[in-house]
Picture 1 (cartoon, rainbow, N blue to C red):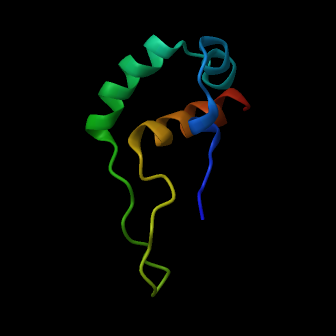
Picture 2: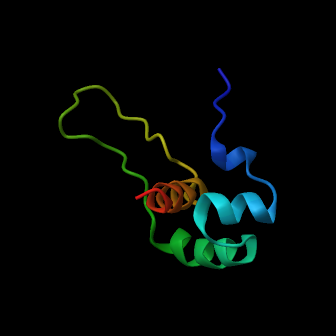
Length: 72
């Protein structure tokens, strides 16, 4: 099954500004710094089954944080 997210659908400067509050250039600059620090969670101590992270792409994780923050 192909999983589509808002991160994959945002293409224009206006869409980036609306979703994150940043321009594409600002997002890319922040992403280069964020990618060095972000490590996806690989285990959940409360689950016995193997854990597959939902946000594996670092830019998608940053986009999610900014998108969520824009609506608080």
